[in-house]
Amino acid sequence: MNNKQESFGIIQSRGLGDIIIALPIAWYYHLQGRKVIWPVCEEFYGSVKDNAPWVEWVSIPTDNTGKFFYERPCEEFKKRNCTEWICLYQSLTGRPELSGRPYFQIQKFDEHKYTAAQVPFTYKWRLKECITRNHIREQALYDQVVKNPNYCVVHLKGSSYQTKPDLSHIPKDWQIIDVDQYITGNIFDWLTILEKAQALIALDSVIANLVDQLDIDIDKYWIPRSHIHLTPILGSVWTILEAPTDSIAAQKLFQSAG
Image 1: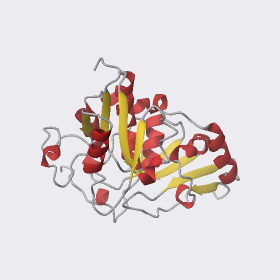
Image 2: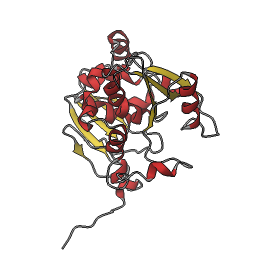
Image 3: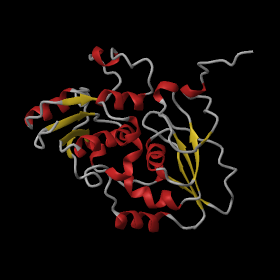
Image 4: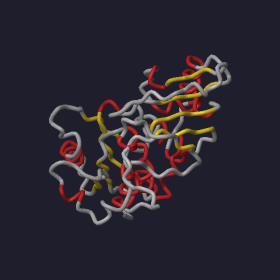
């Protein structure tokens, strides 16, 4: 831990929301003088390489073998003589030791990552310290997208689920900005738009993670999609909306007494 030349590897190659949740874990080791090596799937590389330049990001291909989850990151560590790494996934096919961790059954997936890495969970909300913002790119996206000073941002599509909520309660003279209608290549380019919004309606996904971890002070509405162990702990004030009927979150795991 005291050798400033020591490297430390992180296995969390996907998805982007999980990578953002885990970025303060890498920051913790960086502050210890460790060189952080982090292989990520190629589709996420553009969102992290410039905004967290203190990490040695490695772009790895996403293919049908599934090796991008574990085997390919380990290969990259060996190439770089990195002998210490941590896997932040809760479970993976063929890696029973992950789900055999004693905290697997009792923690949410974001807590699980921090416990596995032996990093205080409060670091999750130190994301602001971890990132380098590109205000020129952020402003360019703002100028392209925002046409009305009063607007609501919506993000309704995650990696494996999307929904179409009733948006009729948004004032009719407001602009509705749907993140999924724009291809930017870098999720952090949305920060200025999010900070200046009147409100955000977001599915439990990457945009919600980003806003919560940065504690962006806007009117925030959270759309559940997963069961309790796959829903992150929130650190700021959100209005939790009714879970969509076709979501896993709509399945009642617990019933009220009486």
